[in-house]
Amino acid sequence: MSFPDGFVWGAAQCSFQIEGAAFEDGKGPSIWDIFSHESGKMFRGQTGDVSADHYHRYPEDCRLLGEIGIQLYRFSVSWSRVLPEGTGKVNQKGLDFYDRLVNECLKNNIRPCACLFHFDYPYALHLRGGFLNRDISDWFAEYTKVVIDRLSDRVIDWMTMNEPAAFVGGAYEAGINPPGIPVRFPDVLLAAHNTLLSHGKSIQVIRTRAKKKPIVGLPMVALPRVPATESLKDIEAARSRMFSFRNKRAFSYTWYADPMFFGKYPEDGVKLFGRDIPKFPASDMKIISQPLDYFGLNIYSGQIVKATLEGSSESVPFPNGAPQGSTDWIFVLPEIGYWAPKFIYERYQRPIVITENGISSCLDWVHRDGRVHDPYRIDYIARHLLNIKRATDEGIPIQGYHVWASTDGLEWTLGYKQRFGLIHIDYATQKRTLKDSAFWYRDLIRSNGASLSTE
Ligand code: BGC
Image (tube, helix red, strand yellow):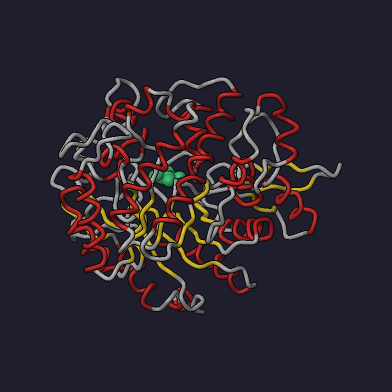
């Protein structure tokens, strides 16, 4: 039961979560650097100052990823490292780091995939209004140009930004991530629009300046719905919940993906949000809807939905004690591996890449035998892949799968307790240990997924 030919097996991480070296070699402070140093914001006051020290240990990390057989490593570039003030003077030492990282990937037969924005950006730009300032789209384009000009002779895989909906939702709508101040709903929509515009302008730069024909996409947030049964009514109920608004919240697939793929905001959202939507020139939608090569889908958990007798739909709660990761929001619902790509493909008609899937645990430690036993992660990934396989068997074009995460890292405000990696990090010594899941994933990659059926 191999996966389709050319299916790409990857792993992903993000600059702020693993690089450390927060104030080294000319890097400017980022919004997360400042926020994580404020008291009470982070689990046990933990910061990204040192983290997994990937900035210095990337050769070892790339070598280990190469040993696992990872075919594509998705990393993110820190805007603050490259342009400490966000615009203007380039920090060559920061840019050099990504240059070395790319070479190290290639040396280990790994395709480097650069994501330009993963929740974090220069604090100096926040002081100029951040994503509430329309100019951010030009600043982001300027930054894209600097990175593209330096790396695109070797990097062909580019992502503009990770999960725009989660970024705007966490930073501006819920206000739990930096800048940490929830804004009024019209400003949430303004931030969303400026985020979309930044994405669009960035793609224009990538497509016009890249030295090698680029593959461009971005990972979208995980909000899948799964039908309670496979009856047509439940399927329709799940599909409609996945793509419709139930309240005034922009946190959704459609508010972000419809402008990117269809060049317009979804009608039901426009009706519901009304005058809260910012005014913008019609030309914006042309910029935002630059063609994308695939729809990147991050999947972790979901909601079960059933049809009601009145012809409406309702969410079915997980039973007490349902299987869960160590973060509250990850309930194990492997059927998302089938339903999310299926629903997304039906609506957006683009090939799919599963750009993140994984589970965190606070039970990953080095055992007396020197190994890290994480059977739950193996089972979680296997179950999701079996569902993904069902989707590919039915002809849904899924081109690849990336485990979140390559190594353990700082799980944002939840700190170092939450471990998602295939590679365990002992933060006291910086020793790396491949977890059991890494060896399992290695065998899976070697067989292009066929080993799943013989387990
Ligand atoms: C984010 C990662 C995060 C992961 C697990 C994803 O949505 O892109 O940065 O670590 O979820 O919470």
